[in-house]
Image 1 (cartoon, helix red, strand yellow):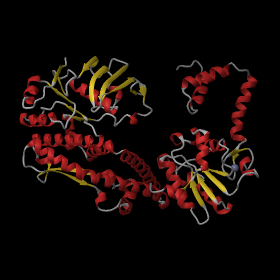
Image 2 (image 1 turned 30 degrees about the vertical axis):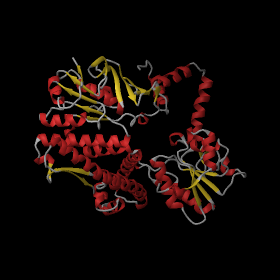
Image 3 (image 1 turned 180 degrees about the vertical axis):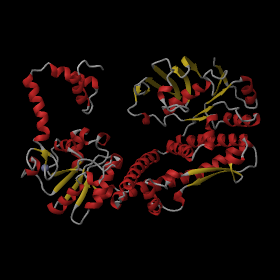
Image 4 (image 1 turned 120 degrees about the vertical axis):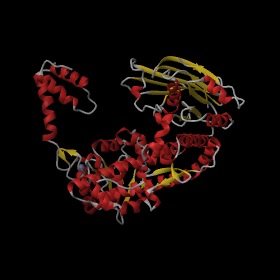
Length: 205
Length: 360
Ligand SMILES: [Zn+2]
């Protein structure tokens, strides 16, 4: 595509960086925005800026929040004895939408994958270990995706975290479509949370 | 499984061709370059969703065209089975069984079994260990899906472990806990794969040497020697032993990804000491053994595709081969040759009348 304006081209380039957006769609977005009046665009731009400026990671679970502690961690109704380990906010929202889980979360922010240059120190594993030390959970549910890397991360954490008095479980395998919690339907996902398995029993299979 | 008809649109050099097969043995005859081999490849394509000769799909579409279609109608125990494959340039290929598209191509593989025997198979002798491993893996995984899954997992674990080793080497750093988790998972699947390969080669070798003596009619003793670092110890032991070396090299230096099969004739390496005819007989026997293996695993006769069979093989051996494939142990056989008379003559001793299809 050849653009008559450098500025239009720049905007298209930016939109095309979004996941699942090609240059054609990006161009459609730009044409659409060009038709808007100034105040609307200004509000749009502002909300983008605020994303980074006014949000932060929850100090406990690494969820995205506007306060130090997110609403889930701060809620008195959550069961503080059960902790579910997920990869990121998308997986957390998928679990939340099942309404089958009332415990707390820990968002790892990724899975261990040397190919992508991600080691244990690049995810919030260290903080998770600290939380397990300090917060006295009785059960830890590993809910990472069932990929080679997700499995390895589960395994790594299991080896680091297992201790007497702490039950480590995993949500039933093969339950999520393509291993992605985000796409699993709520009912199957909900069921697999209720029927979780002892992690140890899923090893050497 | 019997292929009753095949129709191609823009598959390699064939713009449009439709063929019916009414005999068990079908011979495509014609000059070099007429596209006989491409017909065998089309049958292979229907079975494995890919070409035997050319892994790149876009090269299979006739170079001036945008779309290619391969269609085959099979007779599977009196049930009609229609397989369709369509491929448009720049798009993913579509495979259908009786009009319904497969979710995943891998769901199709295994439904139709076929074995191709071609002069290009010589890479099994002349090529590197990875070529022989691929042969080994393809035969085993046809009858053992979990083997294939383990293999895919192994390769992924290996890739990750190597990445980790490389980053350790680059940053002059080492973290035992990080490598340990990959080692444990890697060695778990490695031991399973090793055991399976070992068991497989033992039983495969018996079938293989039997066929060799039938086709070659000689007292030569052909052997398949499985060579694996895991013969020296468990996968975990091998990883531990080689840890220093791996750290230096920044890669996993030993393991089942280094396995090989050594081909021998009377105790000597085939590649160096055997004649071309002996090598060809060796290859043929390997592939026929593969055929028997699939047959036993699938409980039906695979389709046998014999490409340019007279190449480097004397007429007596071809006749013995044809005697073998004419027996009830075999199902449908497709043969290509430039000379119809030569094939007719080689089939004289059998009671079988092949169907001849001239390709121009
Ligand atoms: Zn939180």
